[in-house]
Length: 309
Image (cartoon, rainbow, N blue to C red; front, side):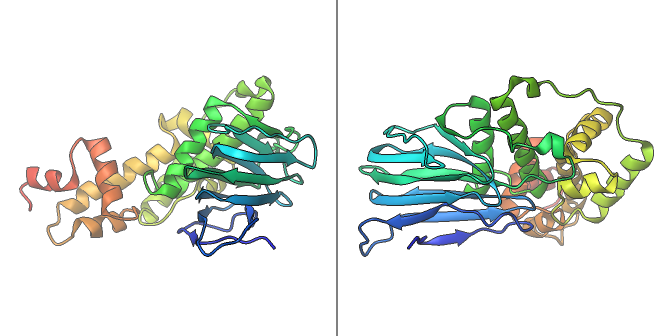
């Protein structure tokens, strides 16, 4: 029987795929050998698993989602296979990646000793609005490979789960779309050439985006929502928006949040935490981090410079 111990589901947005890594202790004991954190968005989910020294069997059944994982582990023994094919007994899998398309399965066992090991996995069920751009069904499975760009994007998404990154829906969805593009690029370099942009957004489309962001500034704003407002696929929308505005949709939403925050900070009756929630940040620390990055000072210093305490 496969089990997961000490699972923590973080605040997610939407209903991502139900796929997950299934674990089974080969020699069960009293202590909990691993910790799992999960988060989901509209069409993908992610999980970070940290494992104490132990011996585990594992399995991923990709019935409804593709599987992409970044490993940080050194095993003293073990083996892994995709779809029951040739088995890898590689022991040092630090910074190695594994990809399995929808319908594939990954399974094996590991004997971890001497250090905490981890795996960060993303389960991708690509949106269908732009099938050609999102389609990774023909990308072949690959076990323990290296790719610098994929690794960097996965690490950014992992920071969202860890709490050290930006917990913003548009940001996470942008990273998810980037992963789809990079998976295709990794399999076939021809996909590294973007299709030319056939002009940017119209004035009406830009006004709709601005009005929507203004009304929903205190809420999570997703790329899929913005794209649907102007009748474009997510990939086309991101490229067309940046062509028109000079910023990515995420950067634009972030700049609008900070702009409204500056106005609210001029009111002495609102705490920093109140301002953070009013402009769509999860807490005061996230506002502090983003405000300082864009304005150069903290919200508290900004208030002090404007004669407020």
